[in-house]
Image (tube, rainbow, N blue to C red):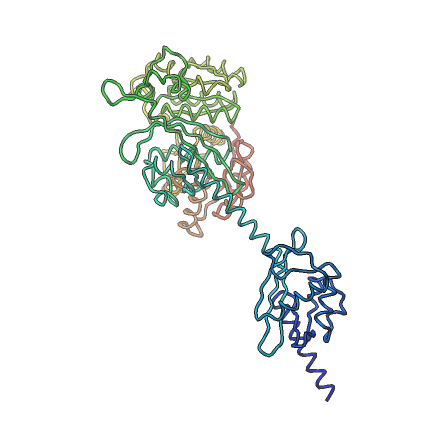
Length: 558
């Protein structure tokens, strides 16, 4: 009979230990005589008491006294001020709380540990206490509260700033906007958040902003630009926009802070064309880089006169090149850029062979001195600029030089001449290589290398065109830049893979600007076979062709 009772007791103890593990805490059960019936072993890691005080039959008074003596005493109500109690008073107070029908308390131990106490007295007279370590939960809760407080403060600050601020993610979707931006756009905040820039801006403006944002995502260099935009309610506005990249790799965002300077601009005699208010000329000069007082004070007319002219920027400094491109873009010029004397020589050779007329070459004085000599040899007007002073003087000097040299008649420089020759064989549509690349300089580099190798090739300037030309021209291999407009390289590759047959599978080689693992992974996930890095070299392309094509390389590239 004793053996049976002992077996039942062991089963009860095992079940209570399982319950203790199930609630992830220490379990204490006591009877109406205030004697311990069961104490789980987990309590030893929570309360600093000798193991002997957890044995069944131990008086709660003795157990609590051991807790007090070991420095682990706790108060019944953590919200009340701590009181200095004697040992007997403290033990008596704890016994009293254990006789309450329900009691829940939270106690902080040290600087970073929290214990929760759940106490219940059952109708039968038995009592149950569950003690849990909730330190991780409390830390997360405190961190969440601190984060929420920072977010609230940040939102309050942004909403009270007098100038518009927006935040976009890599998909060009608005993820944050302050009240000033909402007023500037003429839309409620709810109509902006979660929408793409193409839903807010005109197609022409969004296309230019998307290019600038892509560049900013890649380089991280802050951008400043001036522009004319049309408000939703009709009138135009002149703004200065500062763009910044924030966040961590893989989770970058673009923050745009705009300053509306429309009030600084008046109108001409016709009541339509904007001109500078004389009393605020200095402010507008700083915004648009105009410092010569004898310059025309009508930026709209200046831009109209030089719009569409072809300008080449030469600089080995990525930040200088980005700043110059933004300034030239505000003048609506047809621009491209190179970084070395070798690229400049190659670019101008192509321009000459294609009978394209360049209007101006802008050369950073920090560039190779050979660049200036190369420009002189081609008899193209040249403007030397100091990169540090570019923001102040570039726009006004470019306008001044282009206004001195009128553009030639349109029939002498057809628009299509500015595009890269596709190199498609006239005898049929089949080609060897399809290059998907939107940058003019890289198009020229690809053209020179592929012509030197003797391959038949075609060049697509965006992702949609790449998919179309793949269907029409049946290339044997595709070189796919990943930062294409309309469809990026990942999307275009995935589209091709979804349309092709197994027998017609084509090698697609991703062309990356940066050796980031995430970009490589995304290339392979999109169905690409391999990747190569910019700047493109004949050696890199030859290795790809040898690996994926069975046509020989003629090696006529110089």
